[in-house]
Length: 152
Image 1 (cartoon, helix red, strand yellow):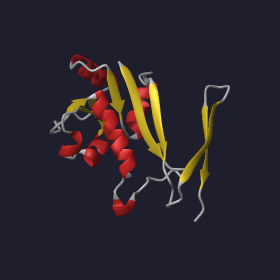
Image 2: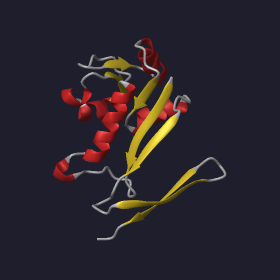
Image 3: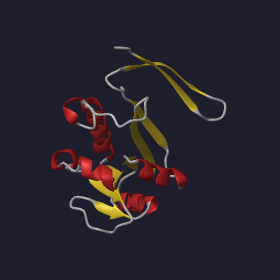
Image 4: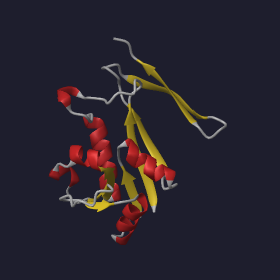
């Protein structure tokens, strides 16, 4: 199964808050949900599920929550490991899985070598927009992204 890790960061490392106190900027949320609808599913940690658990956003998706606590969650299948989460989605006919936060969930999938693609959003910090300057592969397999930060 192909697994896509979808993450958003800010240059200062703090959690981004959009206007109105929402944690996820509308453009990111729209892109994220489009990717989830295309995959037909979504894997996330318990904390992200509690933020995203709006019925209209997750309607029609096979949602899997990665958690060692085997507590039932309405609207989601709970999996204790990344491999179990992927087996569940494969059994339901999915060929691609979209993986969302948080850091522990990402780390669990990466540690087991289960991530095929990373989609990384670089968000503004404190209202200072960023603009892509360039991206390049470094010789050690690292991707470097350079962005200009607008000053107020």
